[in-house]
Length: 119
Image (cartoon, rainbow, N blue to C red; front, side, top):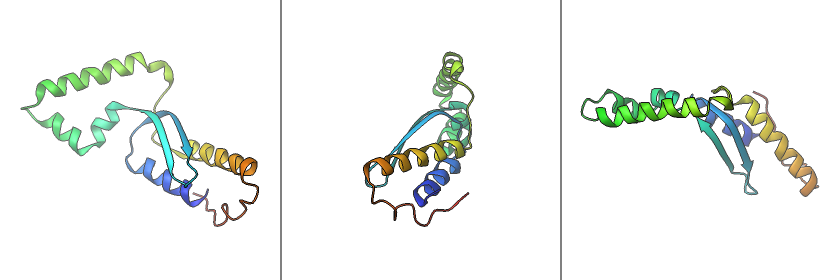
């Protein structure tokens, strides 16, 4: 896995939020754009801001709406599969798509893969 892949892996793993239907693209400048469905329940558990909102008695109405919304999303999108907080498979898929892109569009890209590391 290249340096960008390791950075993407660490960024996705550090928040420990469950994701599914993860898609991403590596731009020409090397930046990675990621789009996914996020588990609102795990986000509410992991986010300091959301956790403090849930504990606040003053914002109980907002907390109730957020919890009900999370339950509705879980019910409606349940057919999309389970959430996973380990981004390994996605990062490997992203790296393969980058290598395929480079082989087709940048035949002189031998140096880009140099210095690869494994997790």
